[in-house]
Amino acid sequence: MQLGSGGKSFREQKVVAVTRKDQVYTILRQAIISSQLAPGEAIRKELVALQLGVSRTPVSDAINRLADEGLVEIYPQTGTFVARLRLDKIETAQFVRIALETAAIRRAAERSTADIVQRLRDNLDRQRKAADSRDFEGFYALDEELHDMICDAAGLVGLREIAAKERSQIDRVRRLLLHYETRMVETLKEHQAIVDAIADNSVERAAAAMEEHISKMGKMLLQLQTKRPELFAD
Amino acid sequence: MQLGSGGKSFREQKVVAVTRKDQVYTILRQAIISSQLAPGEAIRKELVALQLGVSRTPVSDAINRLADEGLVEIYPQTGTFVARLRLDKIETAQFVRIALETAAIRRAAERSTADIVQRLRDNLDRQRKAADSRDFEGFYALDEELHDMICDAAGLVGLREIAAKERSQIDRVRRLLLHYETRMVETLKEHQAIVDAIADNSVERAAAAMEEHISKMGKMLLQLQTKRPELFAD
DNA sequence: AGTTAATATGTAACATGTTAGATGTTATTA
DNA sequence: TAATAACATCTAACATGTTACATATTAACT
Image: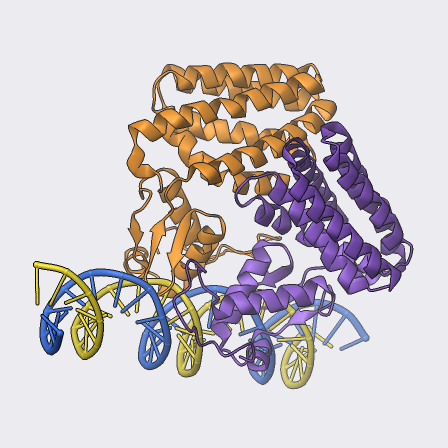
């Protein structure tokens, strides 16, 4: 597998493992979220195994995890396919995301420190630069980072991972939408409002800004469905 | 595997599959949640495979899923263990559960129909009977069913499954706590308040009742830690 | 005796062979 | 021609063999 030497020089503290299946999982997930693997496309395990230079086992393991996450669909004895977008599933994911992230930001706003606010603002600066240079990928990564930072700021162990997992479905859509121009500028403004509210320790304002921000996508989504119907199921 | 003939008489509509790994997953999960497999206990895959009459593959697959769910911990090349309870993880799970289920009950209270309310009350009647006869297992199952019904009443596809998954950690604790005396009676009262609020379409009251209900466990948890410290990590 | 190095052991991770079932195609029959 | 049955093909599911690594145990040495 062409991903670094694999030779661990010394015993790492607690890095629980970078197994092959983890690496395959990361690669496939990335490929799906970025639409490099398109919704509906078949995934041939054996081919993937061959391309990555591993056996079928870690590929199967990775795909099982992606199936739990709802990013692929496995039809027994038939095939594995990148999951198509489903409005009803996305609606649920939106709901979960709003519930989780508004709750998280309330806690974050309560307990925000100067240090945390500073790092949030740093992130926004970088977002501005990315937006100016129309760097979609960079902007997207910073967007994720911001949401992760807010989850962390809530001070709950493992919350970031849970939130990130529930975001999977939505991330695919978000990524696609970013390419439709003005969304990046709007998103930046919304992020600005969110960070300002946290800086002011305004719990309710922060929650409202977050809900507003997440909800915006629902409307854009319908546009996407008319423009790219082939990405959707049914 | 001693779980039914396995002969599918005809082509089921969409029952996506009851594969061996699904069955093993269900069995192990059940065993963990019921503390039949105690926190910290080692799980020997080969033994499990032998006992269930399957190969190591479906057992590994099932255990991988349980690891994602946080119910077991896999130490590579070393062993697999039932996860010990961790206060910080449980705190996060509580937070997620409150965020998710209060949001769900708000929707449920908005859109509740006479039919749904009727079924909620039926469930409460059965809970009362179970409590009277000190049927812990039965009560526990009805408790789960009630929460599932409320999720369903929110009318969002797949929400129940997400909520159930996030409850995993807490379910283990809840199950242990039920055996400590008066909790069953209290729980029943709290459930009553929740259902009443839904029946009245009182969104805020329902959410408050649910939050109250879920929060109660936090306090009981500390008692459990003093009584059964061996169940906890660190 | 205490410390370090060699070794034994057990397990998950990984590789690969085999089976069963879903689906598409072709042949057969009315 | 249309319906149906036999068959070919492909894939996930399952089984099992192999490897690498973490850990415990023992041995060697100061």
